Image (cartoon, rainbow, N blue to C red; front, top):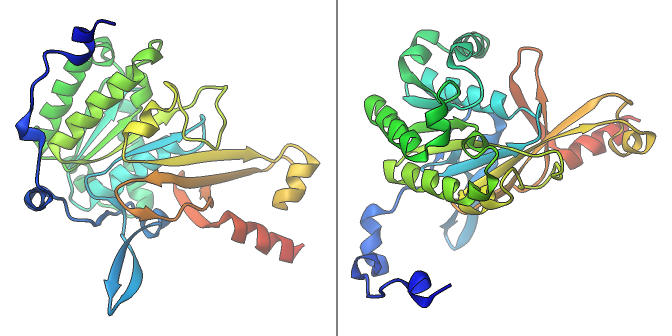
Length: 297
């Protein structure tokens, strides 16, 4: 690689050099955007009162964070994204939901059902949700500039504060070498728009279930502000059954905040269930779950 290609023409860019005090005006507040789930208690902030350090629940996903939700198929990622969207839009906050996998018309029935189960006013959900259907548009999925322009248009049209993309992986299918570039451009655009966002990432069959790695490697986890890993453990052998004190053939679902640079967080593995109605219910820590079952046995 020639020096010119690597270093360009050089020159000082004074506009990117800031005294720390100057950043106060544009610094975001640290508070949570609630999901309506136990996850809201798993992010927290540190405060000092009377010389003592206090840990207080943030009350949701950190404001203006761009969070990565990753897991293998059927781990609950899309259910989580939809539940979060319905909860926010039902409370009156505009949401842009970008579907890259499921055709948009199927979302209507799913959102309506979830709103009913969650006790949310579906008229509010309808009014406050704007769907971008990239699943039916080859150009949106394969032309990043077109995708970002359309996303910006949707956010401005609704004055949305929440964005969900399900899934970011669909924007670089069969071209995973471009994952870092795609994710970085999406991240920068969402930051510029000052929204809080959840991006769903798909794992490939060869990836370990409990790591932040997804299609495109670790690019998504490295670039975005934090990662929540969804995992599914099938109790398929006597040794696994003994470990978790569960019967053979059953399924244990867990999630973990793998990291977040926006706020402190609980990094322990937590058990969750997908109810018969299709809602995510986060329970106790995995360690507590096993201890209870050991005692019961």
